[in-house]
Image (tube, rainbow, N blue to C red; front, side, top):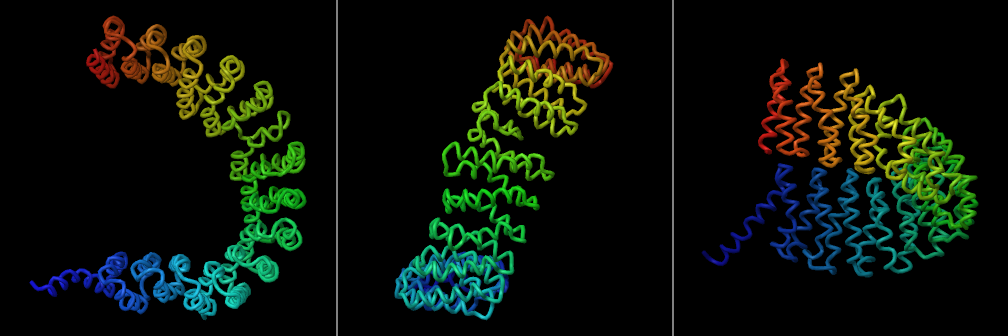
Length: 575
């Protein structure tokens, strides 16, 4: 085989990949595009520049999935075309991709172009990149003009003054474009551009554009302008922001579109940081009150989620901050506590207890706060906790909706750890025992698990004095479902109590229930004895457990027989 043949053989797979780029099968084309780097490496940098890239530019029309992959691949191609000095070679195919109809493809093309901009020298930016931006900005289709909006900031800083002036003018034209989608893209990028534009031009040129966008007839444009307002406010500083931007920002709080008000609420704490203490107290506190009372639930919900951060970030003395929270924010928060929308209440509940350190003992709010009880207890103390929270907890624990009761049960172990056994016995023990006989099975099941966790928290002595007597009562209850609960309790307590306590106090309860009149209880006795096996030895098995299981194995009910025999076999294996 000649050297030429060897070279041809080595290049054959590459030829196949290139052919697949032309194939009618979309999947084959996609696979080939994913392997473009392999093709480029095989071709070498010169042939990649002179053959592969022009070929890709000429065949840019394809399925969206193929184009998306191509746009992503080209963003990593600089080493494959010979380095930074040849980065401009990659611009033509990406320029075409930045004009296609599918948004995700355009966005990926813009992302890759932004990466490439960093590899261009100032001269190459002016010679190659800026003309591309200009062509996109002046394109006939709105798709190219929207893509252009994301490219100004990455080239502006490293070009000459004359070119900068041209770029600002092009961006200004996009801010007043006839197509809302273009103005929307400009509104989303004006803040980014402001970060690289000279301060004097931010004030003289970009701010008028911003105000125009904030007053746009399309709410999709106005809401993105609000997002850019945060960046602009940081750049200008409080004094200039007050003079040049506050009118537009205040109008957004009262905007006729709830989506714009939503964006203001969502960006509120960022605006608070940008505006500083004085402007926050002068304007934002009042604005926040309005947003918390907004007629739209979505706005109230996002506003509620900002309550803690807004109050914590108030740059004022502790007394002033507490005063603002109490007199300006808390009244609106109390109204939200009774909001008809569950999303609003959930958002509030997740943050409101963070106000405890700010409000002090007398003003801590009683809202869905059990999950933050440890923080609350450290602030208000056990006495205040019992007076302010427990009535609400008891009310929820007896709610007619079983899901509400279930939620409270799940927090009982946390309550127990904070309250201590004595306080718990006085205030909540009866409640926990009552759940064991609830008419809803899910509540009874959760109550049994809760009982084990309480024993783990308070110890075996508490179990002996408080829990086991209740379990013994359930064993002789007239309702067989309650007797079943007794056996569930024994199974769970087995892992929380020491073996000697299980043998002395729980095992006798189970053995007595073997003669229950209901077959379901009897086969549950067999199952329970099997579960208790780890707590007794061979002697206890032979003298107490085995006679009981032998009796159940001869039961008239076939299910009882089955479970008794299964328990006997399992326990014998142990001993």
